[in-house]
Length: 499
Image 1: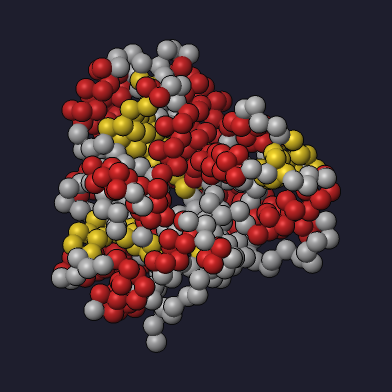
Image 2: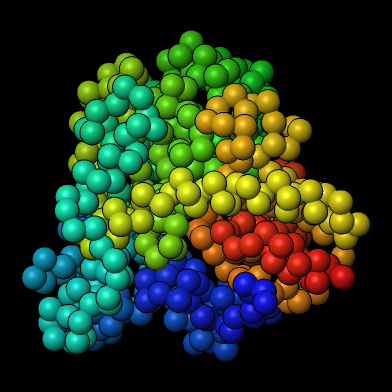
């Protein structure tokens, strides 16, 4: 019997109240989700927490709105008072009401679609939403739910336990060099802002995005550099000559370089040693993000000033929480000042999320071993199938050498594969029985039409598709996150859909 069966629209993936993914079983559902079609959205019981406000958070916001007399207002519950203040500053002159209620923080504004979109997008970009476990605990405390969900939690010092597993991955670090955040994007945001502040004092305000990166990382760089001219995109991750030329053109003004190793979704690994050498020569800082394959699989700290990563991926392998990591390279110039700058910018993980992460983290290496043993077999199947056009993975010939230079072992290939088809996307996707939804790096195999979920604004217009093509991105690209199920079942599901 196969490990897979079709999942209905909106079902949580996994079947947990705090699941970070949900089923979008057809391309019609995907398009409806992006277009906010009520026929689709009314079925969603969860979603990726930075994109879909969890029903528990919605329930708590409704209760606070009632208590605070906020009729006609939209209330956003934030991860901290500090985050509510940042949101207020972002909204500028808009009339807002700060909410502080028994330790809960939030910001309300007159209900308006445009204003609501600005607020939600900001919290999505920087990782500022209240977590579902925090909302659940508060609803229970207020007598609005009978009890918190039964689950395995770490009983001791959860932060120490998480650091105990992570610190050996970053030789030379002390516990104080590792910051655990409420999600991966908050890790990126905290590192970016801390370095930007320090570098701006030296007249360095230019930031370089190397390659096509995850959408919210792109958004941070585009929106929060000092001026639009301070954001520079070097499209080709392999073109160190182009990177050197940009550094030279902005001599003395470059604050930092941000890239992913490998990138999401083309899984391209740049020459990080070469990047580090150029950055040092020009006085720029380097932020590296190894989320696609995990710090458990890649050794990158020596090439970076700061490493950021999503612990939602692989480390929280159950797929039931978001978390992030910031690591300061103790050998970096001014490491102590970097730590001091990052500490107040981190949104800490809620206590129950941290206890859940501490309970899961010991399984990371075993989960990765199972996933990474299956990936080459899935790649070989896809490469040989006549219905598949292009296949990208960690050991793609274009960057195999760069990847192996930082891989902890030759088998440490991560769990992500992306590919394109020779036949219409809709037919394949709708026939496929694998779980279909956002996120990656969990024990459950997941597939999604990534460009539709990440860049629907580009996929849905001719100009946007031209922009994607210029970046070497096919709008119909599929992103497959291989899970821990039997690889034969994964292959059988793919073969049936391709038939």
